[in-house]
Image (cartoon, rainbow, N blue to C red; front, side, top):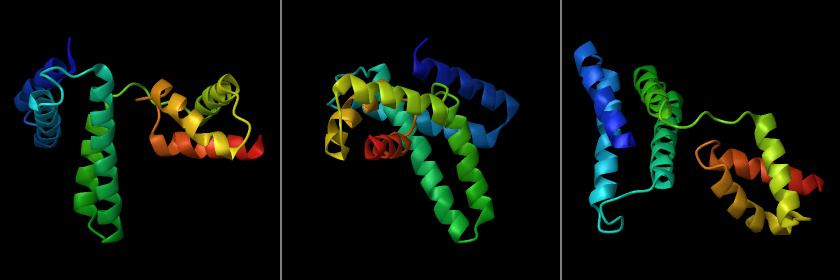
Length: 151
């Protein structure tokens, strides 16, 4: 079952349960997926990798908005954004723990033969592809920097 089909099924469930927040979050995901599919770049079909990137971007946008609302003292809007981020995150693969990510990044560093922070670009290219959907880019970057600085 494709992601858009899963989202459509979840939308039906949210409508039956009268869960407005979930319905709104799922509809925004479906809208984004349809927009990407119908854009000239994708040719009517998007890869699983592109779907993951889209979902990650949507989660990140909501978390960033939540941080802004939190700084402004808008708890009502903060809670809504965090709840939507959590709903969207349900469709992402399970996130890696920091220990798992460190082990994977260490393996990638030895695989590409990186020796210093100058090799960060090589490591990030491989790590971003290999860990796509399983970890956020910022976390991957921080781990790579830390491990290369100690290498």
